[in-house]
Length: 146
Image 1 (tube, helix red, strand yellow):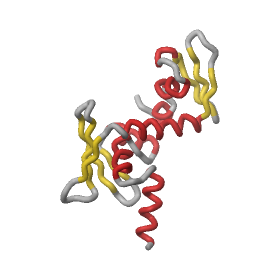
Image 2 (cartoon, rainbow, N blue to C red):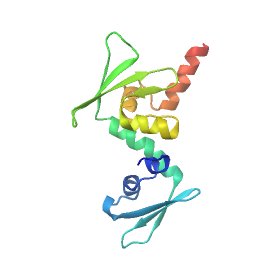
Image 3 (cartoon, rainbow, N blue to C red):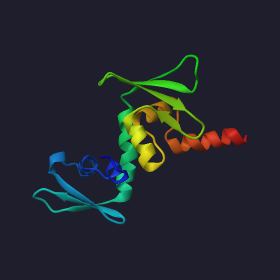
Image 4 (cartoon, rainbow, N blue to C red):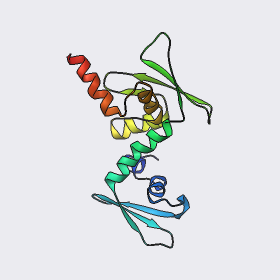
C-alpha cells in the first residue's frame, strides 16, 4: 500500500541517492529530519529528508525528458504525453493553479500529499517553458492579477 511516507522515502530513492543497487537496501527508518538507510552487510547511512524531497521532484523531471508532449488542437488546456519506450499515453490538463494527469503517480501524490506533479506534468511544463510547477503557479497568479 502506498503511503505519503513511502511515496517519498522509498528503497528505490535511497538506492539512487546513495548510488547503490536496490537489493542492497535492507530497510528505512524515517526520523524527524533524516532517514536512516540500513544497508545489507554495510554500515547504515543517514540521508536528510530534504535530499529525499528534492530527489522526488528531480527524478520525475529527469524521467520527463524522454517523453513526447503534444498539445490538443482545439483545447489549449489539454496535452497528450507519450512515452515511446512503454508506448503509453496520458492526458494532462493545465489549470491556473495545477496540472492534472490521469496517471497513477499523479493520483497517489494528490491523495497523499495534497498536490501533485508527475513526469507527464513535468513534460508539459517543459513544453510550456517552465522549469517547475512552482514557477508555473506563480506566473499564473501574475496573469490573473494583471
